[in-house]
Image (cartoon, rainbow, N blue to C red; front, side, top):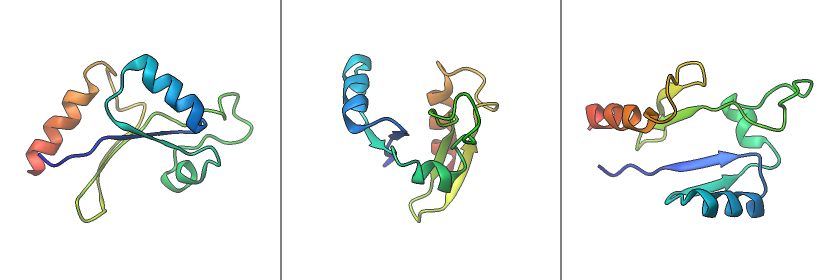
Length: 95
């Protein structure tokens, strides 16, 4: 399929490593502790939001040529347990 999964959060590298180890993740995490990626992709919350330390849960499907092919924001994700299957289905349909 050729797809690559990468996660990003505002956590530090150390916090992410601990979390990834606890969760048994088999994919890479990107530390966005300066919030630059979140700002660029529109997932950073406003500074006055009580949850400003956390990015909004969003999935992006980025095509091989670097274009955003699909976006699932936290309102569009109905079930986080099956969300991965939904993304895989869309990847396969683009294949």
